[in-house]
Amino acid sequence: MKRKPLPPMELHEDEANAAIVIKGLRNQFGQHVVHDNLDLVVRRGEILGVVGGSGSGKTVLLRSILGLQKPAAGDILLLGHRLNSENAEERRRIQARTGVLFQSGALYSTLSVAENIMAPMAEFTNLNPREMRAVAMLKLQLVGLPARAAELMPSELSGGMIKRAALARALALDAELLFLDEPTAGLDPISAAAFDTLIKDLASSLNLTVFMITHDLDSLYAICSEIAVLADKRVVEKAPVSQLEKSTHPWIHEYFNGPRGRVKA
Image (cartoon, rainbow, N blue to C red; front, side, top):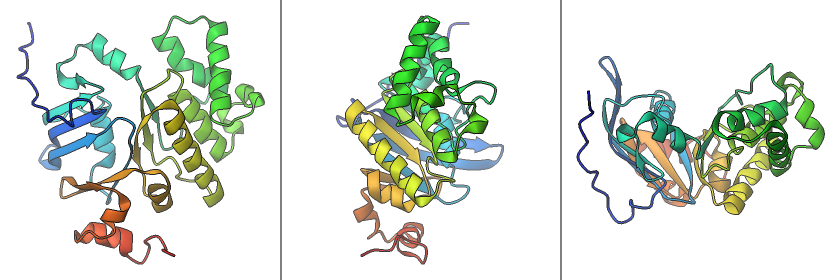
């Protein structure tokens, strides 16, 4: 049965060239509504931090954008393509333009670091093994790992090395859009700061758009151009951190100015 075409998606001028446009998103599980009429625009080249309390649906939002969670309603435009109107092959091409770093790294435990980085290339490209290996070594260098790390297994890596290896895999296909799920979770403050610097430098040098879920206030202050706050089943504010510090929204005020807020000089 031929699918009925969707009505055209109305876009404002600032949305036409955005990396991500979300309009009227609704996610629910049975009677439990996670998001209701959620709107969000992520500009190209932006490093966006996404924050929210437990149960606010940060991971569900990420899964929706990645096409892993089918929304009950709404539209998502990813790199100029409307996800719910594209066929499987087109969605596959869009997927090849994105990279994802999961919270735990999610490296394949039975593959070496190099083989983990080569996995997306094997799936999405026609490169031969020698070419894939050469690209993998370049990506290792890009994320600051030594060449010897290529032959290590994930179980032999420190927490910081796992994050960097997973980042190298996320960038294996020269992604335009990078998704990070709690990238500094589990790292000591020095390693976390170094990883923040790496993300900021890569975003600048590779012209990446970054969508980052995090609870790390230091990361938000250090590298994010804007922060989207999930509360009340939607994005209640999206603004630079300096503006959010002045917000009167109860959750935002408590998050940035409460007893565990970032100490200000």
